[in-house]
Structures are given as C-alpha cells and as structure tokens.
Image (cartoon, rainbow over all chains, first blue to last red; front, top):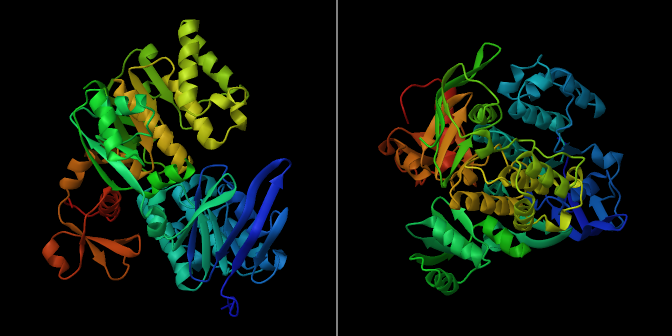
Length: 292
Length: 273
C-alpha cells in the first residue's frame, strides 16, 4: 500500500487560497486542511465556491493568490495520480460498458483494472452500457473508477445526489471503507442528513468560509421557535406577513432565530391562538441564519 | 379525494413502470412522493397531470387552467430572460396584464429573483432556475400544483426558501404534490407516498407511518447485509425488540423506515416489518 503523508499529518491544505474569474471572486482567502482517515464535508449554497475550491485542490485550476499544497507540494500530474475524483456529472462514458469505463480509468492511471473492484450489484451489469444502468449504479461505478488506482485522497462532488436511501447508504459504506484505510475524503453535499457522517464541516458562502467545526460545534447555541396550533396555515400566513423567516415541518411552523416572545406577539396581534416554544436549531436552520 | 390517482398502472413498452399505485392529493396540504432514480415518481406525476395515460386506474385532476406543473427540468426556456419566461406563461393562461404584472412582481420578490429579471434562465444557478420554474407553475394560481423534484440539486438554504413558497401555496388552499429524493424534506409534508420500482412502499402521514412500524430499529456493532450506516453507527431492523438483547434501540426516522422496507422488498422477504 502507498504510504500516506507520514511526516506531515495533512494530505491537502489550502492557505488563503483565492480564485478569480475576471472581476468575479469565486473563492476568497480560504484555508482548509484534509488529514488522513477523515471526512471533511463542504457545505454551502450553489455558487458558494465549493466546486471551484475542489478544482484548485485537484490542480484543475491554478489559484489567483494564496497557495494549495497536496501531499506536501503544489498540485501537479504527480499529485493527481494519488487523488480520486468523482465530479458532479460523474465523468463516465455513457456509450461504453461498465467494464470498458473501468478499464479506461485504470489505463489512464496506469494500473490494472479488476472486476473485483466492482461492488456486487455492479458486477452483474459488467457488460451493460452505462447509459442504461440507472443513476444509483452509475454513481457506484464512478466511485469504483475513481478508486481503481488506490488514491490517498478522495474528492467527491455531490456523490449521492438523486439516489434512493439504500443506494446512498451503499455509497457511504464505500466512503467509510476508504477512511478506515487512512484515505482522506473531502466532499460536498446538499443533503444535510449526510453532514452527520462527516468528521468536520466547512460552510462556505459567496466564496468565503463562514463557519467550520463539528456539527455540534456549528449548531451550538442556535435556537428556533416552534409553533403548534390548530390551523398551521393561519400561523404561517401571519408570521410570513410579519416578514419572519418561516418554515413548515409537517403541521408545525418553525421560525429559526426568532425569540419566542416576538413570535407570540405577532400571533396574538393576528388573533392566532398557538403554543410557542424554543428549541435547538437544526443544521439546516443554522445555515439559513449564518447566511442571514 | 380532491385530486389524485386511484390504483393506476402505467406501462411503457409492455412493462409496468407504475403498478397499482394510489395517491390522494388534498387541498391545503403538501403531499410528498419519495423514491430514488427509477422509482416511478415522474411517471406518477405525469399521469396525474395528463401527460401519460394509465392502462388501468382512475385519475382525478382539475381542468387544465387549474393545473400547475413543474417538470424536473424546471420547465424554463433557457434562452428567455426571467421576466420573459414569466410573462410568456401569463399570456399563455390569458391572465389580465395588470393582475399578471402584480403577481409576477410578488412571486419574483419572494423567490429572491427580483434582481435577476433580465438574466437569461440559462445563466441562472440551478437553485434559482428551480425557483423560477416554481414561480411559473404558480403564476395562474392553480388549484392543483404538481412539482417534479423541485429541490434536487438545490442547495440547503435555497431549499428552505423553496419549501417556504411551497408551504405558502398550500396555506392559500392549493393542493400541492411534490416529488423528492430527500427524506428529511418528505418528513415535513402532511402525507407521503414512498415508491420503489413502480410500486407503493409506504403511504400516509409521516408520524402515522412511523408509528405503524412493527419491530424495532437497533444499533448494530458491525455491518452486515441487513444493516445500514447512520451517523457514527449502524442500524438494523429486528422483528422484536426482545431479540436485540442489550443493543440500544433508536427512534426511527423516515430514512430508517424506508431503508427497512427497501431491504425487505429487495431481499424478497415476506411479512411486514
């Protein structure tokens, strides 16, 4: 097995990395690290700079200022050979078979491809065209291709988008198999349930890091008001009319960041009879507050 | 039933892609259809709006003018600007120009698109384009609003905004049905229908569906073919809590329940968990 970064306990590091496209700054002053055996979750809105940051780490784009170091040096073809990458669009050839895609990737990295690299459900589809196997299995194949050269660091851009929970669970098993072997993983997701699977989170907004830490650290101290009443619609309409950031959960109306008294006052003024209590905010609610 | 489908079967090339599925979409509520790729969500919604004809079963829908449909591709015209997309839809439904202009202003404001009225839909981010598609489906204030994966690929914060607009349409009395792959999102709907390979897997109010689960979900020490990973641990379904011995029981959520059902169906087991 390839020895991982033994001396420095960091596989990849960006230091005040900035990337501009013309007058637009996609990534600004971002400093993050990925170590062996850990999963770093990169969260944030579409356009927050997550994919650009990943492309800087992969060496697909140069930084405008700041620096990126991968396995102790600048990104290059040599570092790319130790990186596994699954882009949002998967990067598979739809008109080639499963086996041909795997062989192509292995050849590009100069390694032998082995059908043993394929998970069970995919091995059955060995000779099927990738365009015909369904998104869940396409995602599994993209993983297998990205891992065929046994990389030390894996970069995954929305790895589980669009698949059912069982397929998602299987993909996460593959991610954890990697970290159990000491591989570092950095990934993006819009599915905040998955943030629980990450060791650390980095939240980006408009190109900058706006929060970082474990899930517990990020959500600590954030509160949300919960409204329970006969007619959720009247509470929802009253709070919306008052310009509050209302969300709906079943028949419960929730107002992240709003003090209980303020919510009660608005409801009372509008003649809505309701119970209001305060509780810990979810990660999703916390993210709406961080941005606000 | 206000709107919905009863025991519909849809075949494509002689193969049932939807098999004996029933879905009720009541007014003033959000109903969620959940499932992965190929589960039949889009086919079900297309059947509901009349773009697919079932070989069996009954469909309840309002007249075309009372129907709003957003396809999974958002239904926007990429070469038209945000404003042009909206006014085109307004004219297609014959909405009185002044009323139309007022509604467009209000919808784009809520959707955070007011500053982007002159941008081409093709130049919008995925989240903004989905919100535009939603505003277009809602412009004529339909009684039935059918949304096909409005939030797939949309970031979490935009998803909250989108969900707020969806809830608002329901609060005004529309019957709303949306397809989603996100179970945490489905858990917020008034009722859900989970599909797998064209068949109904679970249906009802999320709380009732969870309460009706037999057996228990417990933590497992190591992975097996019947466990799945949640946060830092593994979950497993057991038919009887007593069989799990010392293992810690967990309060299941919709994700646990859907995975339990999927494992049962895929392994060909009989009986209900």
